[in-house]
Amino acid sequence: MQWRACPRSPPRLLRALQDFNSAHPWSHNACYHPGCYGSCRPGSVPGVPAAFAVAGAPTGLPTGPYDVITCVAALHHLPFAEALTRFRDQLAPGGTLVVVGCAREVDTVDRLLGVLSIPLNLAIGWLKNRGRRAAARPVSMTAVTRSPEMTFAEIRREADRLLPGARLRRRLFWRYTLVWRRV
Image 1: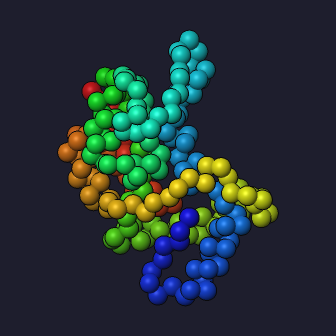
Image 2: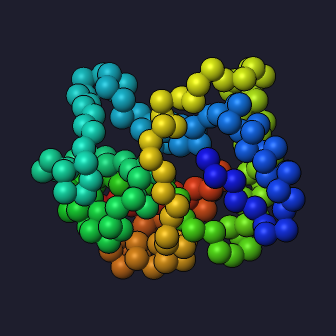
């Protein structure tokens, strides 16, 4: 993870944070998985089949309809409007789209959430690794990363246009959530 901080942060402090995080890694996205998948795990509801598909979005998504589509820390790698439109069009009536995304930090709220996330990130990294240095980064943290280009305000505007009634929330750990139900 690249540490974002105010321009006046001492380089030694930033290096120390980076070193600690590298020694005690944890996936920021994993903490959102229970909220994304909730009760739709295979076998979680007796008599109701559940299947998972992993697909290249937006064009590699097999034709739906789908009851749930989740997109975790991937939307900022995709053409935003095209991906949301494809997800929307593939949802079954009553289906839900859940996005855990990353937005470019630009305002006071973004920076405040980022600053609050730093000590929490350190604490969770320490706890998840039981205070020991990790032998290696988790596989879930080896994907290519890309800094987000869109701000939260831009994401909200585009989501409002494409997904009327979508709920967007800024979250800790440099994330936001978007939830939309097709009626």
